[in-house]
Amino acid sequence: QQPVQSPQAVILREGEDAVINCSSSKALYSVHWYRQKHGEAPVFLMILLKGGEQMRHEKISASFNEKKQQSSLYLTASQLSYSGTYFCGTPGGSNYKLTFGKGTLLTVNP
Amino acid sequence: SAVISQKPSRDICQRGTSLTIQCQVDSQVTMMFWYRQQPGQSLTLIATANQGSEATYESGFVIDKFPISRPNLTFSTLTVSNMSPEDSSIYLCSVRRGSGTDTQYFGPGTRLTVL
Image (cartoon, rainbow over all chains, first blue to last red; front, side):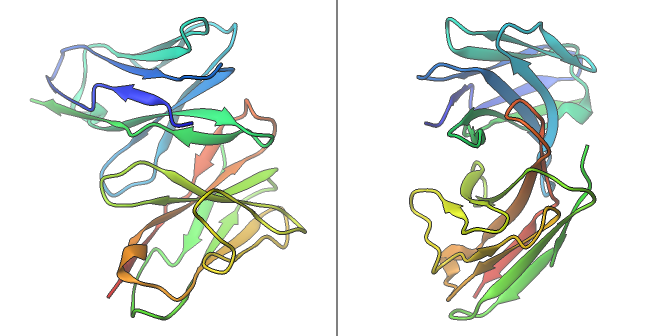
């Protein structure tokens, strides 16, 4: 089942903060976050594991609430380079294949 | 991390023809996947490429349309058969070295346009 991301899009000015949410209707054991810039492949940011601690990638951090079956990505003091589409992926099936949300388009303006 | 290359990087094909996309990884990986990403859309899993056996396809994707090979632990091919304009997409190879909590990496993608 596809995780649900919100918001669909967000526009920021450089230096502002944003939160992107990812929720699932099924129990989660991990959540994977990626960023994709236009015309490029998705790039791995971080994995949130059940029972694990909050993770960070540069000034981007994320949390994982197992009970609520959701993860949130926090972008602090955004930079122009943060622009792109953010996808969360949740594993499933015997081979832990990732199913991705529809993505959140983040635009950071000067 | 994993270094993944795909060939071709892009192609323009005629309706009714077939295209084979290659995916090469710099070292052995446990899992190889093929995704499709239509313009402005999310990443949709086509199939899991299994070494030495038939690929495992997701709902809505069939072997006759998307035959997949995986002869070893570092290489896989995806063929898009009897193409139509609806097959115009980016096709991405993705790999994972170990268990389900390991990172899954993506290749650069193949941008396919069908006329």
